[in-house]
Length: 367
Image 1 (spheres, helix red, strand yellow):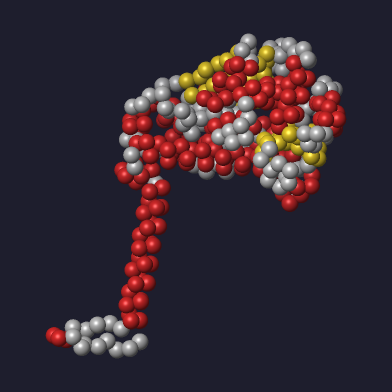
Image 2 (tube, helix red, strand yellow):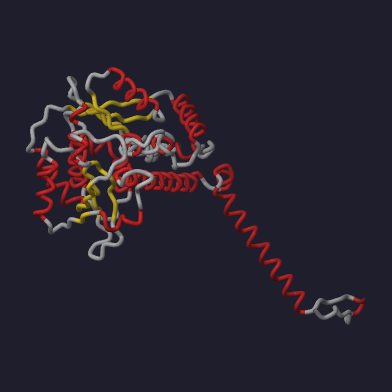
């Protein structure tokens, strides 16, 4: 580095070019650090609600809620795949690409054979693993597929609680559900269905399922199924232009499939109780379910606003904000359920019918 020169009158020194470059680098680095710090700080709800307008703040919170639901759903799908792949010590995610038998839209005979196996009451009914796109599909990577897994024959008619090696099949969602819905419409059933829409931060769902199990009157429960959360996400962001009628067909087919799967658990009451996976999914799914199952039972659970918020905050304190909740036991009913911290604490989606509501909510901490 050259020495500084003092050639100006009064002995004012000027730095050489290298020093000016260093100062520029330091200044740019400081600006970048300050910019990044500002961006990080703005992600904090306690900070952003001081700077963003109520409309922008609500949009930001919606994006965060959706991201949390998506991440929680992907994690649940991974846990389900691990369960049907033999459990934690056996499952190898590297084999996912080859273990699924893939049936396409044109494979009508294969779909019919699969339907015959599903409708056979003497065989175990498959579990719903996931509803996903296959980005590695060269023909149509954007098409949604239904992933089903058949329990081993040695397990009997009921879905085994413990992990096991299942037979895995991937089918086109819409085409297969149309066939499946027709098969169930042609099949008489004496089993009643009950759908629980919960707006009490999950307290009602937990209470009802516990009471039903303790009563032991033959009411089978399917709490917060993960595939319903996936369907709610697809409905809210329908990039593939799936029609309302097709959504109704999908719901009818998959609900009846789930009810058929637990047929051994229904006793004198002959009822299957479904709890919708969280208050964020209710506005998306309930209109479709009520239209499809208009003659079935629909139960609404709610509590006082303050009590529900208090209960939700208690869940966050207990479980944390992470969607990566490990089930207390590696059992099917637990691993196939949407994480409680997602289903019970993510708020309802619309919030648009009341124009004053965004301004009011902007003054509250999102947590």
